Length: 293
Image 1 (cartoon, helix red, strand yellow):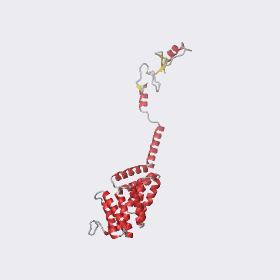
Image 2 (cartoon, rainbow, N blue to C red):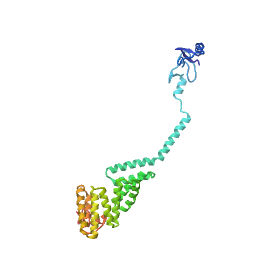
Image 3 (cartoon, helix red, strand yellow):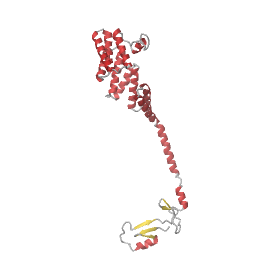
Image 4 (cartoon, rainbow, N blue to C red):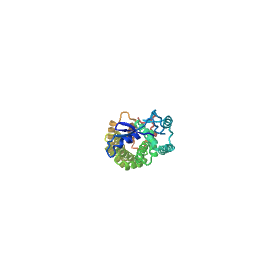
């Protein structure tokens, strides 16, 4: 291969370049005085000489037809194919291994969307399922326990809810929602135990934490009604009626849940009989003759 050099802006072959530079031995050459050039008539891959005819350029370098075809359609090396296949296998394994995290993410998001629509019954199983997929996540586990507890409170299973909320309290000691739910569970458990002093104390604490909440006011009214039913003392009845009136003023107009709660409290004050919500609804089913208004 006859290499070309640019020597002081003159393009020379190797032999002529050596002759040109022979007189400069011992003398310092500046950068750029001598540079190597690519001979466009020599294939850079197989070194085939094309005489005086330049080859076509491939990526700026001359290449003969056969070498150009080879370089343009060069197959991938076996080691590169093996490496790519190994990476695909690794990615597939990681995807399968971590699929539970994807499931947890999807179920959590679906649960949150249902909660925004107010559909707690459908949201809770999804949130619980998300926590089950990632048991090592304390945050997810605590969230699931909180929503389990809310569902239990709706079913009047206060003691079961209380156990879950105490676990939530350990992880979220200053969470206002957990603290409020814990008080609701405590007053429900106290009612089940017929400990009406504790019921009243928990209701008052709930009202202190939520001073404008109609449900908290109604809980205090309910506790005083229990005290009146047991003792027959008029001051307890008076306080129950006072808090019940305050709760009515704060409750949303036409709220069926508040109306049912107020009816049960009124029944307790009128009869001095303490019965559960389930028993009350059995005796006075809605839309039937004899039902409470």
